Image (tube, rainbow, N blue to C red; front, side):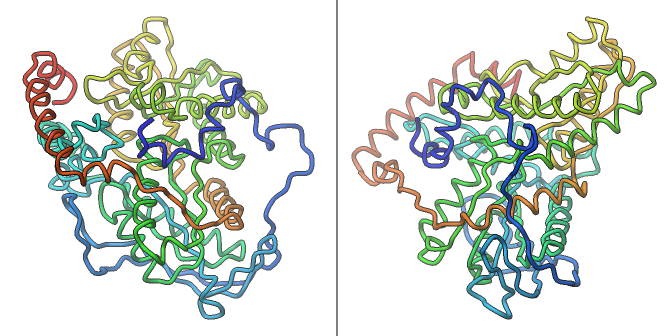
Length: 474
């Protein structure tokens, strides 16, 4: 496995290699009720809340396009509270116990002019397009090519949903809701938003965390299931930034890598599905169609990405919860949003929709299971492209479950996850990748550039690659 990837996923190896993984392990909350340990809040104080504020901070330089120094920040002062032996106080009482929560998300272009630079940042990420080490110097040129080719089509998609992604605003709203939920449980915290491919960038949020003197940090990716291309990519940035800073390297951090199996999340999803089924004239006849964002098969088979296993277990738990409520509709899982000439996780959403229509399925409830916020892949890809395809394929009745967004039970569960994670916070120890040392050797770097350029030239001019770009990338 690539050491850059291994660094971010070492905590998953025991989980992923477990023989029971594919046998759908049931979490403790779904088993027969017994005594279950939890973090208890012993003191709840009355507090007032205010709107989270966005503000400008000193600019930082990086190789990405469109970097702007905007960070989501919200500050509050509350009385001290105790969580399972851990005392958390407000900055006015004990600055050394100041708690921060960093929400990680993908980011999205806010205007049509942002689309191409956003795509460049996306495809310049080595966890998105995983080139062999010999070709890594081509990462940015390739990202420039792909983003330029894809930008016109992507602009049309964003124009159809209002001219930009709503992800930034929704994530800010979720941050404020989480702030209030934590305060209701007695915990004062600073909430930060860090986007991977658009502003406010993760690195900028981290610098604000340092500036604010945070003494204990919980990192909460807004992806229920872990994948190399989402949570893993953001954690790689986090580890690199912390490793290079003396203050941050000593900061106690707790990373919630995935939370798809949490009771609050599962029940919140089941609530939305149960409610939306009632929109059909015959609710029991509707098939529940889970559509998840896909990843290349190589991530799972070669790099040990647990995404597919976690997704399948997540669907199992949701259906188990629905069956406990007397809902036993048929269901299926498919993967959407594939890009490029490589093989992605199957079955593909578009192909399954056609097959279901051919089999006579008339009512379909689409469930975007890997998204907790509305964005381009729910508002345009599912609501427009897949809906149209489904109706053309013979499906008569179509409905879609909304993303969780600000669902109170979901936000409350996120707050519980943060509180439960606090006691395990510890300094990040991430080993330096040996690839950096290799690049420092002038001779090895010259050899890599020379032969890599020749092979890349042959690759880009091959008829197979040109056809692939025309069919899948443009």
